[in-house]
Image (cartoon, rainbow, N blue to C red; front, side):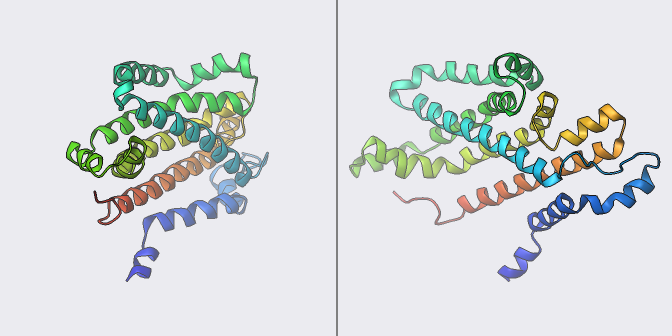
Length: 250
């Protein structure tokens, strides 16, 4: 039964389809040539789609990883007695970071950081902070006070309380924020190609510049499948964290 459920998993088939297109897009050249006569070449050739995906995923991983670490640190700080007065300030700063359009952040970052992946990482980092901070704060504040009191009564130190009670119980809510942040970053990272970063957005912008619609379709489909697959994997992880027995008993 378990093997059957794995085989029928939508995430598995989306992953298979995504991988097939990632490596097999050049084999679809006759289909694109037939659909779009006069466009040459019919498939993006300036770089392999796998290499573009690796670069794209690396940008998202670097930015989302940094945003997760900082977001968690700030959320832990403002939900402890010593940092409660800073909660509104932290939320406001995170919200301001997301209100700046990524294109504007790129425009401001390029003069200081130059062209390439670094401005893109900065833009994704700022854009991804808010959902992580807000969800982490909500997760920590959602831990029942009675559970904390019971843990203190058992002699747990503040560090042990955070490690053994707060983090495990808040994990599903925190992960939901990371899921939103990463999914947004996957789509937003495409604009990094406008400042010289290699992403799955490179075929899209090359297609727009050269009036080659097949390039736009190829890049857009791969970005969409990448985002959908990542979201599905996060959803499975969230469900696993919420299963009975995966949370600590105090």
